[in-house]
Image (cartoon, rainbow, N blue to C red; front, side, top):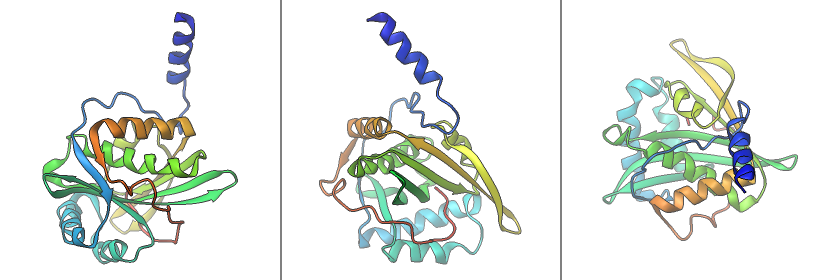
Length: 214
């Protein structure tokens, strides 16, 4: 019994770069997780504008505003005290027996950062992959210095490109097994109230939404 447990621990810590790692997430805040509704858009736009100076290139706000409204991406919001405090989107395409996933425009209201909401936002989007019951390869791009956060979960650097003259856009990816996806849903369920429709909405495929910051 003890030998089997030790072997599992060794396998966990032996995971390679680019494979999902849950690690220690600590105490996470209680909140509600649900899908974006039209009445949330103004609050999401405010969250973007507050984050823009440090995390987004100038001139990308119109793209974000369209992203909120065009229905091409599944958008998750996190709510506390009847206010939206975090937002992030995703698409998922079946490719050769796995899901090819792109995360986009993930952000937390500055007044609520460093409190675990970014972790819950990531886990909520990973948990949505349960409905397809296949492994996943998840991709993000960022210009705002959030690579350290995603690195904690096993995201590995892929490549870079110049998004604007002033911003270098970096891409990262991580692989998740179905067990990893179930683990995300398990942790999420301990800290959140999840809307009944959350796991039944079909994940949209990738539609070339352009710049994304997970």
